[in-house]
Amino acid sequence: MSYRIGSGIDFHQFATGRDLWIGGIKIPHHKGALGHSDADVLLHAICDALLGALGLGDIGVHFPNNDPRYKDIDSKILLKETMQLISEKGYQVVNVDSSLCLQEPKIKKFVPAMQETIAGILAVATADISIKATTTEEMGAIGREEGLMAMATVLLQKV
Image (cartoon, rainbow, N blue to C red; front, side, top):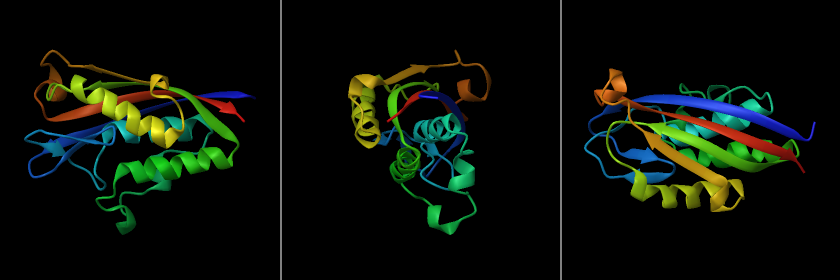
């Protein structure tokens, strides 16, 4: 098969005293995402999508949250290591389509920097990285600003 599609989803709760990392970019906000790593919900969803496209399990299989090596790790490193696995299997990324769901902060002005960061790691053009955002119109845990969520879909092509 020359093309493979994968999807990923990730959730993190907000916590005070943490930095907020989304798409490899530090976002100014009074809360950050809680997690074993830097809790970058978007990069984690992309990692899961990449791994899922090739049937390689999920981010927890490769970077377990009980492994001290990954404590507070920069998720860009996790994405780079995931991309290395994809390359070793003989695939390259065609494009990524992703959605963020969070009430606050507004991230529109940060999207170009996120696209550049992700595109650089995945070796694609920034135009091949789609990042959209929505709210839950103040409904549920995300609407109450208890956390955030990201979904990603990737298309891989055999090299």
